[in-house]
Length: 74
Image: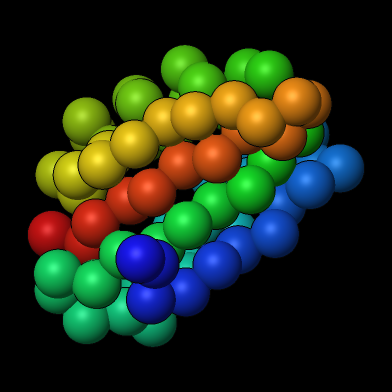
């Protein structure tokens, strides 16, 4: 279960990443951010973002045209 949800639907790269980075700053270590986006490029973007920042990508799923990511703040 996510501690916070970020709705980035309708936004294109790099806005979902920028908004997720800002949202993660407001979370405590170990808390989880759920990000919802409609940008197909976000699949690769969030994998790279988590790899570069050290945050853990807990899940990456698709529901119709919505891409869902759960990121655990490290």
